[in-house]
Image (cartoon, rainbow, N blue to C red; front, top):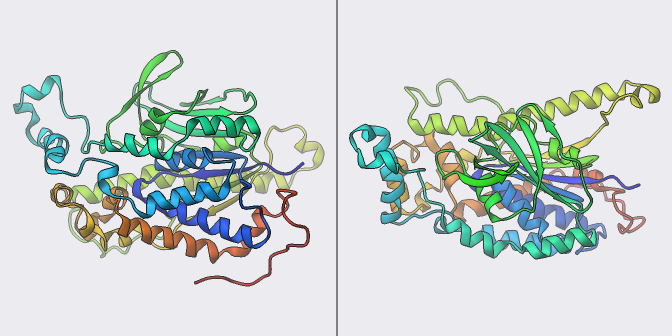
Length: 405
């Protein structure tokens, strides 16, 4: 029986453009070896935050791998901030300026006590973009036809203080529950993606029905202590993880950002904790479990519910905040003005900007980096997919050569 391969796309706001470059390079590499252009190599697709948006858009076209990648490329290569959140002066004043003012002296402004601003930015434009990217009826058809086994997206409940994975599958899958996290079988919609990608304090929380009651949800990367687990619960034996940062990367030099940290620098550090640390720990945990299982006899293996899972993680080879610092000038003036108030336009605050820089000059750089990083790992990628589908031409073993640019 062929292994079930899962695709897991992490969170990271604008950093998710990197994932599209990786997927495009994977399509190119598989096509060279005879993989059918329409054949989706992933049985299970999971995503969190902006990765949930990419995952769902991809899953909606699971019947045509080439089309799904082409759509994501067309969106991210031409992206503008105005498609994600309001960047005009009036919109910024109504959201960001009011929010910062409330933080500074909101206790003096009685008129905001009843209806305080809910977030730094107003992401209402994202609704329109999601409707253009998604074809949810086609998702249902792809599941029914067997082009995809399951789709899962995660969000964090502010109301209940727990992490929730919403999933839609072709065949019934029993819901699972662990400490402070649970799963809910539910038809995925636009509201799930708005909730999953609601970066804390940056974008507003979204109400969703869960266990027959309404709860307010925010970004799925929060409290995500086991990011890869939904793919395993849904039956994956192989998982490809595409990240938006380098988990466990080298720390900065002590003299790089001297002086007291700016608000943006602290916020960027918090974002890295939310989007990167859980994934890094989960990858280490899976590695230890695999090593332990390899020491067991077949009889011992039969007594445990644990099973080995092959993992391939592709993450940026360069720090994305450094790339973002070169593109901050492409942001609309009202947004630059707002971000400058908290130090996000400075080099030391660029980590925060790297999550909000939904501009083509930046996203194209990340797409290109994703392509290069994947091509540099050509042999690993092809080895990961080898033998996963009978449609792969016999005798199409990849040559051991590098295509790195």
